[in-house]
Image 1 (tube, rainbow, N blue to C red):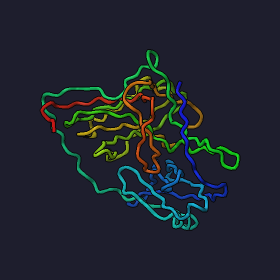
Image 2: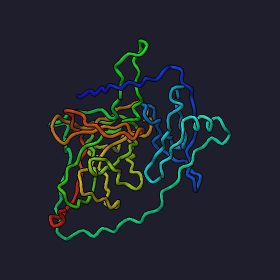
Image 3: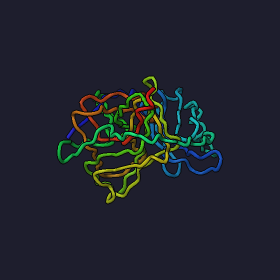
Image 4: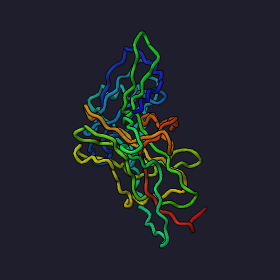
Length: 295
């Protein structure tokens, strides 16, 4: 089994204040669940709960930073941390997210002659794989005042690179190769980023979640995305993100030392992905493409 420990230096002191708030939809005033919330240029971040509520322990040295809130399908919201703190003390302690303008999905007319391909890492744990824990825990090894701090694992997002030849490629389904699961229920978010000029761009227009009871989690978790009309012309990353605390349990994904590379990012910080050496995460994708549609 692989064990991954990453080094991060939080630089935060122990004298943090606890602040809470709630995210609601600006139009219908319903709660906005599982949004990414982070203080930029720090390691501090979280997700909103099903009822839209969230909390942050903010030390004094971060009060001059910017709080960033984002969720697929909504406009990003940024405000000074000091303004958020004042809001959290008021009686109207809510933040509103505005939906992005509705965009009609393009009707895809695929050519008659298509080639089907499987990208990424198709790994069978029982035959030639190992088990990789998800989510990874970001742990700081440097001691601060004699203690080792640990960053919240809700910040991690782990993905696999899918390489395509420069042609229009239709994404049909995503598969996660599961090693084991002991949670009574899982809830993860799947993200799909096309690498445009090397920069990741999420091509989903609304969130894509995997929600299953533990008894329904088999060795293969397949998500059909044909109704999403997803088309890429470049390499893309399919990632899995933890959006809530699932309690006690284990969720392992099949992995190996050889295959398509694995990438990780701190989701709530909107940071870039960085490559994890010597780890191939068990995510694959079925795609179709036409030889006649090369750039």
